[in-house]
Image 1 (cartoon, one colour):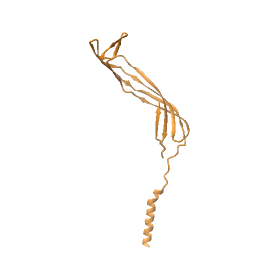
Image 2 (image 1 turned 90 degrees about the vertical axis):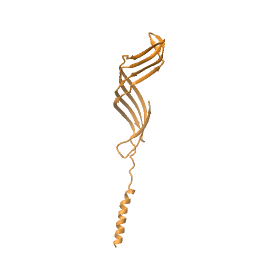
Image 3 (image 1 turned 30 degrees about the horizontal axis):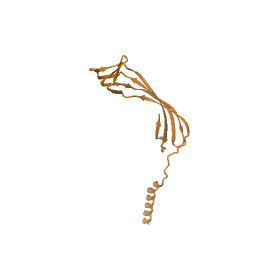
Image 4 (image 1 turned 120 degrees about the vertical axis):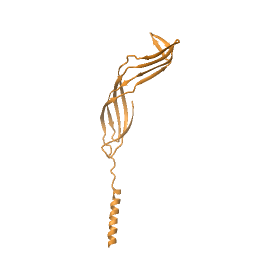
Amino acid sequence: MQTRALLAAAALAAAAIVSPVYAQDNAAPKDTNKGFYVTAGAGGSWASSASTTYNNPTVNVGNTNYNTSGTLSGNTPLGGGVAVEAGFGYDFGNSIRSELTYIYNNGSIGATSLNVDVTQGGTRYNGVANPNTSGTFSTNSVMLSGYYDIQTKTKFTPYVGAGIG
């Protein structure tokens, strides 16, 4: 009798250990949202400094071009600004979406510094010039994008996408 009780307890313990293996795994919810939607965003934008170098530049003085040898290099610091985005999209209901968005960025332009080391007509010109350059800039962009939503068992939906604009 004791053997039967021991076997019954072992079978019950084995069933308790094995039974979670048979539990049904809930699949990720299906994307049933379908239709148009709007999107908007705001943030900051910043650009690095703009640098350029001209080798053997042609210099224009008083409507006369002078061919030179040497380099003319410059650096213009650019400051941050605001970035805003607005658009609309369509969710096809099968984890695929597309969007058309408009993006506006702006920023500031700092004082340019030019390093001059050129020779013209046998005379060498070497020094730094600081023309009075400052102001603002802005960019306008339009993007067409497509996205694939990765369905999960949570309220978060990661996605991958690509666009052209």
